[in-house]
Image 1 (cartoon, protein in one colour):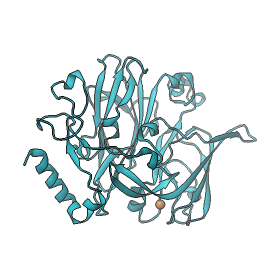
Image 2 (tube, rainbow, N blue to C red; image 1 turned 180 degrees about the vertical axis):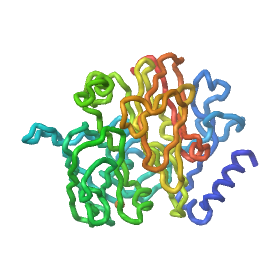
Image 3 (cartoon, rainbow, N blue to C red; image 1 turned 30 degrees about the horizontal axis):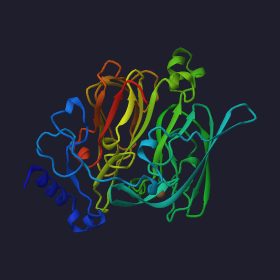
Length: 374
Ligand SMILES: [Cu+2]
């Protein structure tokens, strides 16, 4: 038995898949192939479409899922989710302020998280993660939440709001068929999240009820750092210069043993290994990173061949960490990463957590740094 087979046997054994989960896994395997990179830095590993590679040893990023997830059936594509923001419906209040209204519906939905592996999710708007809500500091927000699911649910926002808007039992937790309107001002600016707060909490979160909630700084409120604030403000010219991506690090316990079997960014295992994220070399990159992984106490993000600045929770306009290539996040921790590949060669650059197990079970991706996007 080769190294990979031994690894796979041990993994299946430890995760308890043999006691029932393997059937749920639909026969899908995570198996060793040389990734079809075709890049000079990986030139010693010839591209292979499927099957065992001639050499198991040292194939960088070699262990990925085989086959394709049906994005159309899921109704969402992890690559599209990277840049898809829900900015709501905008109108004006009598006092001149912006009113931003979002509509979110909870529904049960079976989704495919890795080729052939179905997961009975609870979703916001039929997708996991839920819509990436984006507002501007000082907006008045109205989130019209309908529960079309089979269990009581809520939306608990990480932000500043009244107790009665907290989305916990007795304050916005609603039964199937009911509706609730959460209403509060968008503050503080930053990279936040929302999630269901029904009990048992770990089950409701892990079933897929979470999403990014980004509040852009209002440049007028930050005169000393107005230019930086404008670069963060969605829709400005300064913001358009950036390549922004929202990444929600999540995981799935497919056999309900309180351990995860599949890890990802934006739900689908190894999606960005198979479809690397295009980055134009000369334009800066900003990532809104949110960790919602249940059952594992910590997650992380490591960028290859580069370093980044980090804004913890996104609530400052100066970095809280400078020149790092790894950050760690517990559940609900989040932040903004900023970096550039301006001085690099073009090519494929990996990103992944530095928990190697997560990487092998689906959470890894590639940036494809190019001169220009065709
Ligand atoms: Cu829920």
